[in-house]
Amino acid sequence: MAIASSTRKGRRPARYSAFDIFRRGVTHSDWPRSFDQHELKKSYDAVIIGAGVHGLATAYYLASNHGITNVAVIDKSYMGGGGSGRNTAIVRSNYLTPEGVRFYDRSVKLYEDLSVDLNYNVMFSQRGHLTLAHNDASMRTMQWRAEVNKLQGIDSRVIDAKEVGKIVPYLDVSEHARYPILGALYHPPGGIIRHDAVNWGYARAASHLGVEIHQQTELLGIDTAGGKVTGVRTSRGDISTPIVVNCTAGWASTISDMVGVKMPLITHPLQAAVTEPVKVFLPAVIVSGSLHVYVSQTDRGELVFGASVDPYPSYSMRGSLEFTEGLATHILELIPSIGSLKLLRQWAGLCDMTPDYSPIMGFTPVDGFLVDVGWGTYGFKAGPVSGEQMAQLIATGRTPELIAAFDLARFADGRLVGEKGAASVGH
Amino acid sequence: MLLIDCPHCGPRNSTEFRHAGESGKSRDVANSTPEQWRRYLYEHDNPLGWVRESWFHASGCRRYISAERNTETNQIRWVVPFGAPAPSSDADKETGV
Image 1 (tube, helix red, strand yellow):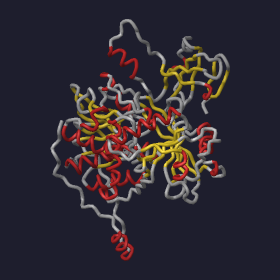
Image 2: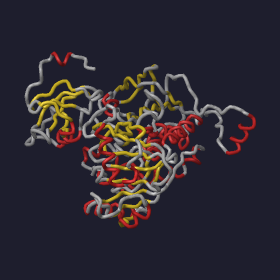
Image 3: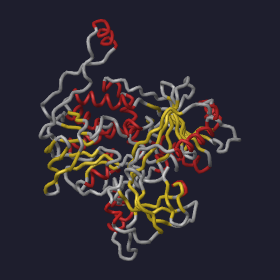
């Protein structure tokens, strides 16, 4: 399946720099478009479904690492409008399984250099990440995670309630709380990032290398012949291509059904909410599995909250009152002083949950139909590494070692990668 | 809020219920092959649209019920006691919301 690199090159990128801001300020010259628009061609070397962080990163690394630029990224809506723009922008690598820890750590490393690589400020703030434990079982899981993390070279350790209180003074670490904080898993490299900038940065960089991004282009069907992908049908015309990569969240089952590949997925909405901005007071990302809540403060001062997925499967992205009620109850347990803050808005994104809380990446029984799906509640933080590894898989035709554990065949072979203890909020 | 019209208790908030999965899956414990077990355990239709499913009324009558719901709109077309036949096919011809 390996593809030869294309000779076609995109236009020369206009680099962003302090000098450029100054020059354009003085000369009043316009900024160039961040990415190009194209007519849909009749054929591509690969078509990527979904212009979110996974699809755009895959396209970018195909072009930058492997020289494959005859690639289209299509999306039925707008770029970064799905999970990539709806997540709570938390990045971390303190997972539970060695496979998961290695994989997400590569993502953190890529995120650390992303602003320079893409020439786009993604505002990655490694402010530290605290997973609170409110009972002995959670403390055991935190110890377990810390030991697995340390073995993989990750900065991750268990701290007691006193130290938690030192890092985040506004947390209620008293023993009189309804769910007293016994300790936490502390992960200093974890943090938050500006998710829109990650999407736009990948899109701009991929476009400069010659990749075409087609928004408002809905996938209607996938054509196969003799068990091989031959092309796709879209709302803007048919395309012939030997490779289709399903990089969607929410519609992963629907698209896989087009080629008759059944996915072990159940789609749940996940809701999030944001408050009005206040002065910066929260220095780290706080997660509480027992209280089903996580919170961080953006650089603008808003508090961003997330929770566990909604309790029943749905593709509806309407918010619910139960979510805000539960959220307020739980977050005030942790930080009583924010009781008078107002919520600005709430929203939902779709999460394709797998049985083992690990993603599904790689080949399927249909030749040329690749998947990068099942990203549950942890897809955004894995965007760069998924793009890098999927690009390598497409270019070489072989599954890279880093993602070998996450193949679809693991459900037949009984090789599940159980990440529930570190990937699910309500465990 | 999702309102579920429990055939035993009347209309109640979905928070009283536990979602128990898609209906219609069955297994033959004595004669299943590993492949059939895999399908039973892991593969789901996960449809975008109408789905027949089971709910457990955990904070009510504590009985299972069957329902047909649209996963795109969360509209519920019918709810019947678990195992009861689905209402007449007229409902199936409706296009829904």
